[in-house]
Image (cartoon, rainbow, N blue to C red; front, side, top):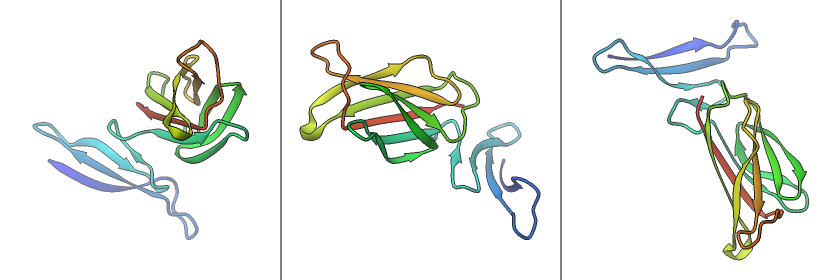
Length: 145
């Protein structure tokens, strides 16, 4: 069994008609929602990224491109927080981060603090010594609820 349905995201009027699509599938049970596409174009499911970001962590910190990221917080040297546009349902999600610089030199990037429903942290530095360093290319991706 399967179904696709359009669901209003609020009260419809002549100036507001936000609608999401829900895709439902089942095997030997009633079909349940597996994917939702919201009126703003976000795809929501357990197999789609809830957030991703590519940003410049040197000098003037700036987002190059992203999905579901409202802003960045440059906390201190090599420490950033990625703030979600739409909050996560809980803080039990998974995220992966990476960092590099011109010429392909690799830096380490790891989690900073415990993630929250509104943000996750990234720490960057050099693997040779235990220090923090602002890095030119920083990436992060989030999966979860």
